[in-house]
Length: 157
Image (cartoon, rainbow, N blue to C red):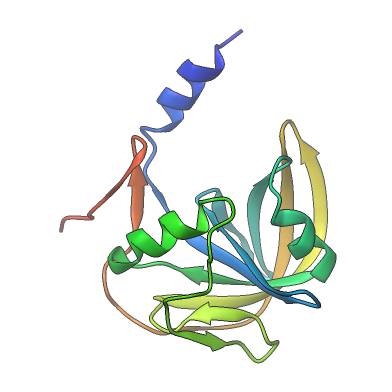
């Protein structure tokens, strides 16, 4: 069996984008940084993400039943670090907008989607989440925030 550290190191060589998953809940806004995000289908428009079973944020988003996805740009490395830190003030110090569904999104994201959870599957130490993308927009054309080998990197043309 492949050792966990080796598996993590190998997968770290796969470059990913980074998104914020945010939701407005009865207790206030919640959010988390995710790099296990992908499109699933164009018809109907579906996305998928993986949330760690140990996440303290995911249960509140799951309970809300819907969330926003914000695609992050190169300027968002510190915002992403903040959202990846337990106990951090995730919504302070940045300018925020809201989607029509009321979910918070960074004012300077590259694009956003409002999503409604349609299925959740247990997948090892994560939950695989499938969601309908019900609304969204491209809001900037700057370069993306990418994650490679355990750190943020720039996409070079």
